[in-house]
Amino acid sequence: MAINTLATATIFQQQLDKIAVQEAVTGWMDANAGQVKYNGGSEVKIPKMALQGMGDYDIDNGYIKGAVTLTYQTKEMTQDRGRLFNLDPREVDETNFVATAGNVMGEFQRTFVIPEIDAYRLSKVASDAITANKAGMIEYGYTPGATGTSALRKLKEAIKAVRDMGYNGPLVCHATETFKMELELEMAKQLTAITFSKGGVQTQVPGVDTVPIIPTASNRMYTAITIYDGKTTGQEAGGYVKGTTAKDMNFILMARQVPIAITKLDTLRIFDPLTNQGKNAWQLDYRRFHDLWTLDNKINGVFVNIKDEA
Image (cartoon, rainbow, N blue to C red):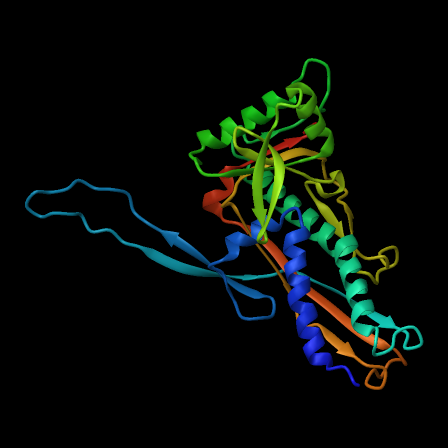
């Protein structure tokens, strides 16, 4: 019986979007996009609220009138990425197409899409913080485990710096495995376990002062990345690499409300071998939009600790 490619593509699209949020270490950032307006394509509208401070109450005239201004900033998702895959019909028939295609798309997301999204998001937050250059919020030249240093002290100083900026809400820390190991060695298994939620999935992560520490691969902890277009000579493999001027982060700490991240799989297209005009094969077109923004009035809720010297 012929496969309903439209229905199959819709199911794949829903599942792949869900998996992208759940498996990305930065998947928790997508929760901040709850009020963002998205109607397809690459354009989104981000709400920004402006309020006024308190005034004196007057016995005769009562309250001083205040104003609430809610505006929407139109943003364009700059990351428009994708790949085309062909599956030979001799190896994939209608009885195993769904399973095979699902495996291909799932593996593609796990090994290429999700690492790139994570690396892009963390480098974007870091570069925004470095550009803002808030006093005391960027630290350079710390090597975890170096003689006379304390990973725990570095983290506690970062937490204090963000708290001093007026953020009393939940914080999140992304840290390399090397930095996390130093914390564990210093605290002799006294790190607390914190329940952390992203994409509807509850996980247990280590924590310090109620701050969850998300172990993050070092190749996702760059202050900048270079994204390959997949066609230029030397970039055929696609994906990303460390930026030419990038530095290695030990950890990045931020108020949970700071990053607004969105990732959306555009219409996933599936063509059967008879419809595919290019070759006798099943064709899967994968296209994903994603981006991250840090609003100007929230960037002082980010602390970046960098291994390299300034």
